[in-house]
Structures are given as structure tokens and as C-alpha cells.
Length: 457
Image 1 (cartoon, helix red, strand yellow):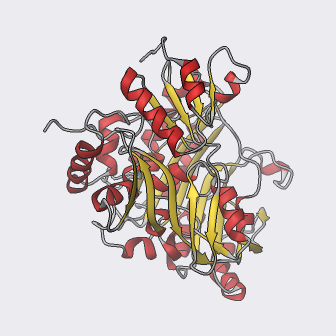
Image 2: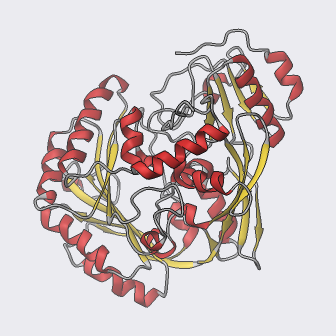
Image 3: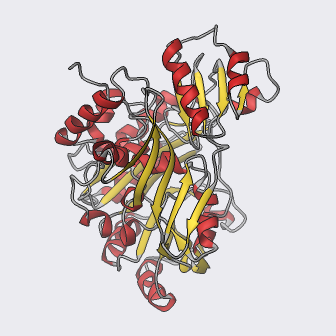
């Protein structure tokens, strides 16, 4: 734990365009919360920056005082990296504008905007960038880690549509970064997370996507349905991306009462193409079992982000990138669900491939583009004290499904330390990231993340 009891709060307030919230201020308890409510940390200051100059001043203050610096976009980190005990939280949520060039099919987005708000804004023009699967996630966080969402097979990772960035580095300097200017930093930002600076704006490519076939299909879970769904999603055209949660049925109004608490597959999907072709592509998944709920139909793309989002106290989850489901994987998932004591245990299956896999491995810092499936294991609950138990359960299931690989997606790791970093990046990628880290953040100011510690020169 790092504490900074003597931060010059009054001077900081006078020097910024944004707001500074200190422990004695009204609204402090709300401001310090992140998505997972069990992280009960008390920062010395929460700085809601208004512009890049505020970001630079806050970074300089953290460097000069030695304060721990947490950078928060949407605050969805499984490890609670968006907050600090006694340090400074640089909160980007007020930097949430997007400038759209419909004819050029590009957009500049400030990194505090959420995926839902960004998609609504671009959707007014019938355009979209593939982000994650959750409306409230911050665009900065989801992008820098890679971004695996509803367009991953059709248009690749979020980082594959990043054309440029504005970044405040550890020395407080604002850099304009793209393929030709600071290309090493541009490479590292796309998959290397927040290790190298604070991205204040990102320039995205936009795709023509207006109406899609999408929504949620709920099926009773069996080993055959789980395996069949993955096979059908892999065989489908690249226009179809599927995110399937194998979990216990929640007591929602549209779920038959007799199914509550029993294993189900809740498959959220998007077919980014012709409606008739979409129905044909989804038909093999519908045919796996009699649906318990079928909400898949033609919708405008931004609607896929609508709906309630639970805010659990803790998620002891982890993930693994694999070539496919190993024999017996369906049974393994169902057996682990039965033993979990968490309120919401989930084995989430994201079928990959397509455009994501066609980008060369060394084009960005994202590791393991050839993985065909991501297994994201979650154990969410309102009891933070049970966190170690949930973490052990999730790790056990991920290991059982790993098919011998330790590869992982950095965006869905918990606090796994150096081991997690080595899971997320192949050795050659990690060596190159280390070189960039030494150049742009040699003292490791930006360390609240899946941290790439700069090796001593």
C-alpha cells in the first residue's frame, strides 16, 4: 500500500480545468467506486480531468510526489486497477466526446467515453467500430488491451481499427502517435495496455454497420449443446460472432420458473450482414435444443448494448486462449458449475478467428492471434471475503479447459502479477514491450495494470 497524505489538493484544484474530489468532499464515496464494488480503496484524490492538459498536470504531480497513480477509463478491471489506496485516481470519465467524420469513416474519441455511448454516436451515421460486449466499459481500457467483441470475426480486434492516438507519457508530454510518428509506441499501445502512458484520444476506423441480426438465445445446457454451439459458430460465416455464457439460469421474467438455477447457455450474437443470410447462419445454433428464450432478430447495431448490467462485488475470474474445446470439455464445464458457490458462475466461450487471425502476429502487441477460442471464466458474487475461493474455482476450470496452454487475453486477467503478463504475451512480444516501456516509462509510473516492469538498462 502506498499513501500520500500531503498532496497539495488546494493547489491542484486551482491548477485544473476539471474537478478534484478529496476524502472530505461530498460525493467522494461514489467517486471512488469502480465497477466491481468490492474494491473498498480510499484514494487521496480523485481527479476528474477535463482535457489533456489536466492529464499532464496530474501525471506530473504523481511523478513528483511519488504517489501511486491509477488511471480509470471505465473502471472494469478485474484486479481493481482503476482505484488506489492513498494514491491519485486519474478519472477520464468527463473526457467523453467523439468527433465523427462520416465520409472518411473515422472518429476521434476521448478515452473516457463508454462503449455504449460511442456506439450510439457512430450508429447515428450507420457506422461502428467493434468494441467489447458491455455498454459501460470505457473505450480507453477495452481498446488498449485489444478488444474482443461482437465484430471480432468480421472486422478483427478493436486495436485493428485504431489509426492514431494522443498519449500523455510519464514525463507529462502529450504525443501524437500513429504508424509514422512514434511507431514503436503506437505498436505497443495496441495490446500492451496502459503501461506506456495515458491515452487521451484514439482515432478509429469506422465500418458501415447499421442493421444486424442479433440478440440473446437461451438454450438448456448439456455437453452436446455446448460442444455443438462452438462447432456451429466456428463453421458459420465470419459475419457471425458469438459470445456464449454457460451459467445457471437467473430468475428473470422471461426464464421459465422450472429452469431457474439450472445450467443454461445464454448466447449473445451478432450477424453483421444481410438479414436472411443471418437467419440461415444462426439456424444451426437454434436447432441444438428447444430455446428457452429467443431474442435474436433484426436490430440496429447499438441495440446490442442495451439492457441491465449487474455490478457484483467481486469477480475471481481468469481466461485462457485455446485452439478449441478439448474432449470432455462440455462435461467439465457443467461439473464445475455444479460445484461453484458463487452467485454467478460462468464459463464464457468466445469463438475467434476470421479477421482477427489474418493480422500478422507482429503488427500489434496483441499475443496469440491464432487462438480459435477464448474461455473467460467468471465467479461473481456480493461477498468479497469469498474472493480467494472464487479465484481458485475459476483458475481450476480454466486450467481444466486449457488444453495445455497458458495463453491468455490481457484484458480479462485478474491480478496475476508477472505470471499473468507472461501468459498474455509471447516472449518476443514481451521483450519488445519491455524496450518500449524502458523508453517511455523507465521508472514504472504506470504500474497499476498488467504491469510490464522495465528491465534495468
